[in-house]
Image (cartoon, rainbow, N blue to C red; front, top):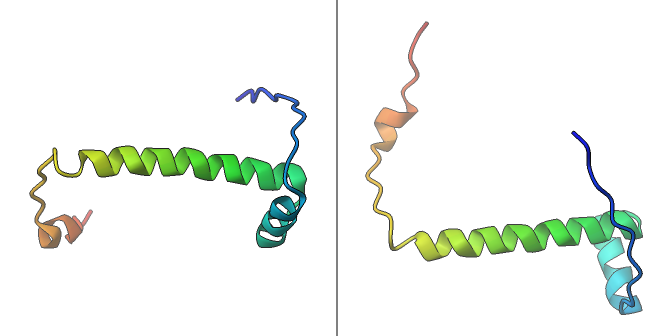
Length: 70
């Protein structure tokens, strides 16, 4: 798998970046990448939540938990 890398220059609030780096315990690039992934996840979650009332699933949890023996 080939990952394309985009080099950017950004003006970031120093305190926000410092706090985020303390939370992730990672460097600048890794912290920003993690933040971007979380933004993407939040968008996907919001889309899933919007579908929540549109899709009706009826699942028997007990039946779905049963494992077939080989």
